[in-house]
Image 1 (tube, rainbow, N blue to C red):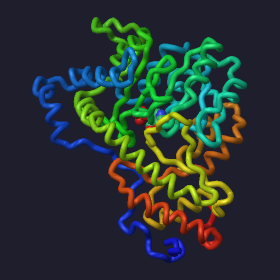
Image 2: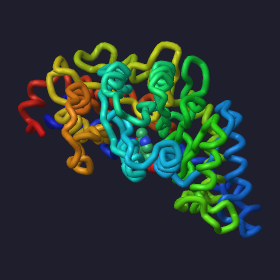
Image 3: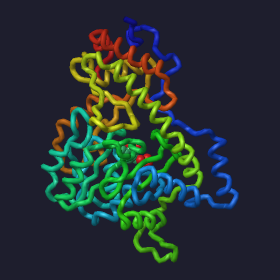
Image 4: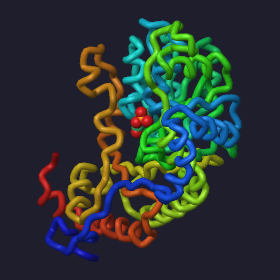
Length: 390
Ligand SMILES: Cc1ncc(COP(=O)(O)O)c(C=O)c1O
């Protein structure tokens, strides 16, 4: 067994292995696509944005897709339309901060609920138990694996409140064979650089509801329908033609990108299967993840903590992320709220580690990450004695 770098062995990646890299389309294809809009002086919210909306509407099998400047602004515009200011929104704490910031910007009170220890998705029973008095639900498709969509829809329907999905990670995911994107009152995707389809920045609001689509179309343009008599205080959340050109070219690569990520995830799974104390995120049977992130949980049997493992992998040149740590309810931004008791979330957030995952990652690099991680486990006692706990 090779010596881990943290104990003096040679690092697995002397030049470093990045955590993520955008799967960018060729620059010439982007500029070629942008050219006609650019030459006509149409720099924002033009024909390329329309084309992106049409293509994603078709791909997702949904009535409307409205392109916006980011997933965060899309969530804000949807929530502003669906929930009266001053209301409260139930959402998992095990998610990216923007899932909570969006309602907070709408004057809504986030109310945090637990996640499942194996899928990392929102815990529907805990959500149900805490739902009294809340005015809406937000659920995230965590790391691209679909959330329990049908259970959430049933719960929201019986409570008579809107359900919005933070689908930032999920453009390309499938729930029981169907593309993620057509559930709840709206699903909102991100096109930022760590996602599979990249626009540079950008978001897509997918919805079957005409009223939601209309509110986002108006809201992304200050609330101005064109007569400068704004119907409500909107924002500038328009998408530029350059972002749409990049996203359209990137979208053409999505199916190839998904094949690559699935092969990488399968390789990680096969390699990590026999390592004690490592659990890989569980994806429901019949579902397909984008693997926006490939995330493991480091249990006690591994012999060292998640943070010590991250330090040991960094010594190998392997970049990782502690997604999502700290969980949102424990972040300073929400310290003014009544403290939420979320023991499962606290435990999961203290154990998760996302490993390098990107479209141009090689299978040989995955093998080398697995080998490095296995070596760290083999020498866990010595590594634990060498690396101070965080
Ligand atoms: C779960 C989740 N929601 C929302 C966002 C915010 O997306 P954007 O940067 O497009 O606003 C992110 C960003 O990575 C995310 O991971």
